[in-house]
Amino acid sequence: MPQKLEYLRETASQTAGPFVHIGLAPGAAGFDIYREELGHDIAGPNAQGERIRVEGQVIDGTGSPVKDVLLEVWQANAAGCYAHPEGGGPVEEGFRGWGRVITDFETGEWGFDTVKPGAAMGRGGRMMAPHLNFWIVARGINIGLNTRMYFSDEDAANAADPTINLIEWERRRATLIAARAERDGAPVYRFDIRLQGDDETVFFDI
Amino acid sequence: MKPAEYYQRDRTLQPPALVPDYKTSVARSPRYSLISLENSISEITGPVFGHNDIDPVDNDLLRNYATAGDPVGERIIVHGRVLDENTRPVPDTLVEIWQANASGRYRHRKDQYLGALDPNFGGCGRTLTDANGYYVFRTVKPGAYPWRNWVNNWRPAHIHFSVFGSGFAQRLITQLYFEGDPLIPHCPIVKTIPDPDAIEQLIAKLDLNATVPLDSIAYKFDIVLRGRRSTLFENRLEGN
Image (cartoon, rainbow over all chains, first blue to last red; front, side, top):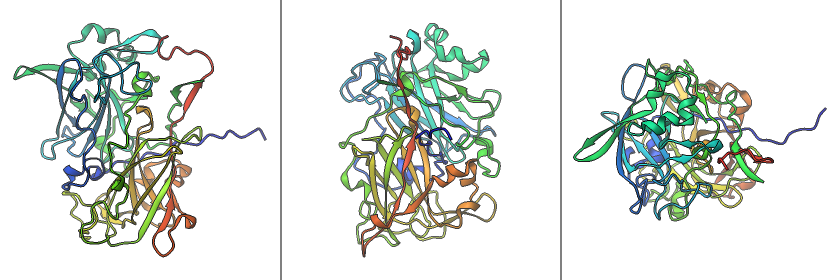
């Protein structure tokens, strides 16, 4: 017998279920327990860059909004650095770059305020276009879905982005690009995530 | 050696998106294949949490909501370590849990089950692992409860776990089950996992040594997150 390798195996995922809010957003479940719920303030007060809002729905295979979904976002600051020891450089005091958002139980709409991230250095010295990393869990989702949101006003950077270019089907690339609009003079990006259908969002195995 | 990418996730042990016997997955599962993405800085980094983010009582579900005495139910300690696939502890990482009470009822505006709410039980907790990856919660053992999948499905007693790790690629939500529960092999959600050993790994074992005599029984539950390669040779991960 050859020698044994001493690796462990990753714990299996299970669905977050319909009551994920109790653990991760108890206020929405209907009770107040923690001093502070995590993930409400993504950028903090000192972040440089453009303040933006991002909104959308997660839409299931019947075309209906998913009303019990929870999304987490992970992003770089305006200089392209993540708030992490390996994040590429310092970030502003109070910038965490991580957010957690749930939907309105009636409409399935979600939204959050943050700053627009900068381009970040990718593999092999290729710059990555500004993007937000998403992780999506819900009842009926057996393992969290990973995707990225890019910005419609970054055409040149998007065209050179190594991840977008990894997607063989050009028409599917558009599913990752959020459309910019103005509301009361402030930028709002719309990012609808489609779990199935002709315009199924591209999801990544990261 | 500088750590590099995370090991590829073993999709043969993880549940696929579409498992028709878990009906809700049918309309919520992507139909196209996932696009395989080599890790960049966006995946090897992830949020960092500290003791300022939480309170010490947050991991004690017997006390973190109660106002007029202890919750009803079997008092238990759930403890273990968060490790990676290289068997190294994952320190200072956020672990969040949620569960039904001893009657199988969740404190949630959408839960309509007959089981009684417990005025002294909220049902959520959170903590940071220590330098050895160790965590501990005190709570009551949750009850089984019925759910609409087929007409007569029952969830085995379980506690939901959310774990971060140090990179966004390690993000994981799972469920703890209890050793000896006869409902486990009947559950369509458990059976979304195709690998029997991976199911066993979700079943917490009775840990008599960790019980508190005359007070609380204990279960041990280790969680394994993805491990990382070590860079023996320059692989230009960050483009330098």
